[in-house]
Image 1 (cartoon, one colour):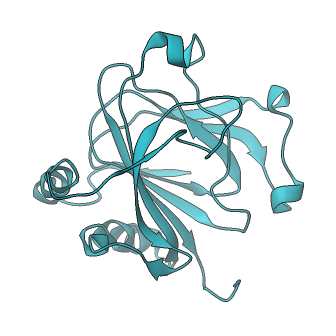
Image 2 (cartoon, rainbow, N blue to C red; image 1 turned 45 degrees about the horizontal axis):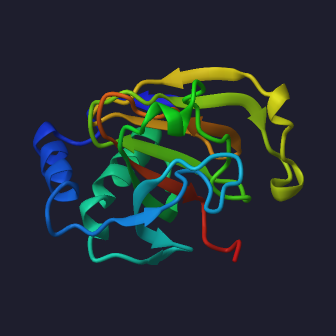
Amino acid sequence: MKVFDDIITKTEQEDLKNTLYGPKFNWFYINDVTKIDNEKQQRPCLTHLFMDNGNINSEWYNIVTKISDNVNKKLKKKLRPIQVRSFLQLSLNEKLIGKDKVDTAHIDLYIPHTVYLYYVNDCDGDTILYNYKSKNGKKDIPYFENIKIKKRITPKQGRVVVFDGMIWHTSSQPTKGTRTIINFDMVKEYGWR
């Protein structure tokens, strides 16, 4: 796991944040931040799909590419995005989230990938990495009572956390405002299709 602060300039950070929070940017409602039709939790949020299956899905895609390009330079790698999404979570009522403010543990894709997780704003709602790494995708799902928190990363505007996408992870719910992230799922090549 690596953390890079100010992966884009302060001006670029503000421009990106203002665009995402602006009146022209389109967000879409989903009923749970980690899993559609989640039977265990219902933690609604807004999402925007920039890229899916390696195909650009949004007219706004170009506003986020500098983030992944700069991370690639820092890592000295040439990973390519296969899925790029943004999530905007609002503080929820305590009755809705309960005492446990941690969302459902998950992996984004069931293929080897690397996650570049960019924080659009300062907020609470830590990213949580667990001590479990999948090896066989859908056939390798942990018993959640057996996994333990290995690392917590606090959101900070301009920060990117980079980790192996096969590591089970989640976020905790924001309690003091809005939590907005851009999630890049990166692969070496598109030949897996």
